[in-house]
Length: 103
Picture 1 (cartoon, rainbow, N blue to C red):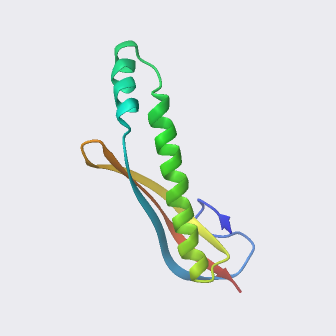
Picture 2 (cartoon, rainbow, N blue to C red):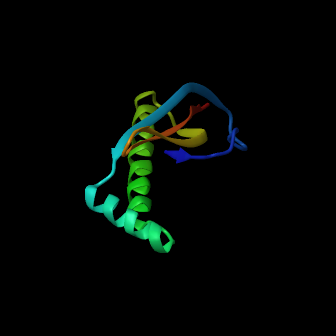
């Protein structure tokens, strides 16, 4: 499965199968939360949160790909990611794009 952030697939004809998406709501780990609070005192990257969001993006992407494969897609174009806080201590990560099949 090819994953592209561009809006059109170059040099191939295809038909659009529709919107596909994957989402996950991930909560913070108490230990990570404590360490993040300590990190705010000195500044710098909060590695625990970076790892958490990277893992969440990977899961959301896999769920999007699974949905595209169920439609018989060859690729997904126009991929975008979004995130938002859904409640205190929990963030949603969303991956979405257009599933296409080559003609």
